[in-house]
Length: 398
Image (cartoon, rainbow, N blue to C red; front, side):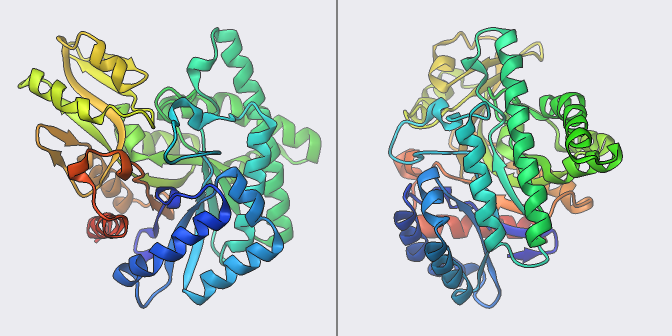
């Protein structure tokens, strides 16, 4: 949907279906109701998530033509896609496998190039498109600093292959698209600071030299090409878990010229431990589930941070010096409190206020995908839940 502050959508990773026909069915089953409640008389936007299998199937001309016709008939458009989860994302153990295959592999590169080929066909004329993706790799897969640096080198080279694809698609279709890298706790790029450091100190110099040598571009033109086609996905949940201030990050990005391709509007769980510590630690146990990673960053009494790769590890640790936990768990946006527990809803409001003051992207995507693993008393019908999420965001954008 068009808002005064950009195009607003929700990510279809909430809907199951790793094969295209299964996912298309869930879209047909759910979107009419959602659209009727949110945008009955104006075009409605869909943030499309395709697993690898689904992307292979939808890339077939006949299936893509069928989907385009359905979108047109229902006044729906696609401007952004989620290319982070490659494989299964529902009713299976995901955990760190959400990064598999990572950007050190040809499979990740080919998958992303295929997604851009599909998006180029779906993207409305005159609108830029973006695809969010993983932060290179999962840091705990690399045992030594040398191994991690080699992973960064290989991942960067593969991302430059995607830049070449985007250059060609812009030339052949007139569609401007960007890869939006999404920092996540325990990714190789786990927060805004690490993303900015990698981009400005490694990716930009290496990429500029590559484009100058291979395409004969002037250094300024090469740099502008990179800044256009590789941007940041600002996932509010992830940045909140890392205790990063949106105004600070946005200012730092502007200072070095890096652009934001998309804000993923998402909320984490927050738990203050200055009172009722035992009761709160007991309450958070119901969020320890076996499907997704729930990284925890604890803030200590001294103002330092202690990180845990998953909630189970945090629950086993000594929390006596912890003042606050922030837990990676994409909980509903419109709820700010869960009894003894809180959410980082205030960080969403803060981020959107920064954006409203000086808009820094045209793409806004709600990404709440953990409905099925929430404690039972928090679960609602999916269509109703999505509508409430979107309406809450619309209220923040007035």
